[in-house]
Image (cartoon, rainbow, N blue to C red; front, side, top):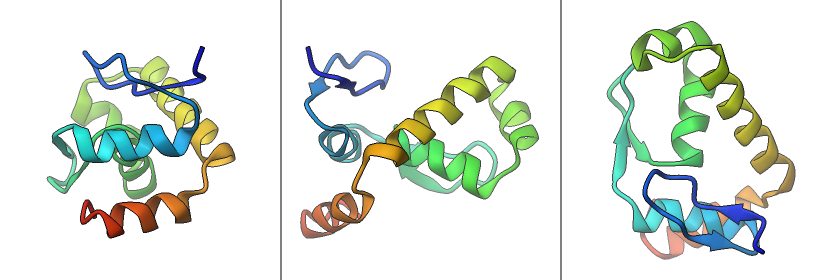
Amino acid sequence: MSRWKCGIEGCDARFEDVEGAIIHQTTEHTRHECKVCGTIVPDGYFAIRHAFDEHTRAEFVRAYDADSSAVRVREEIKSDVEEEADLNSVVQTLREQGAL
């Protein structure tokens, strides 16, 4: 069984590597509008990264009506992805595809 799944609601796509999952999220799903600042970002990992790199946890909780459990889940996803992914390669691939 593939280790990485898309994770976007309603999508059951699975991937052998995390880079494939991020590229899929970016190219196959609609963009996400940040409820804190209105920035449009790819859904999935990039939306999580935006929320936690650009805003406080408190802003996220208020804007998304989230709780500490939701924050922890997203922080864990972000950490897992960043431990494993070659994000420079992902960004390069997405730029070559015109997705960024």
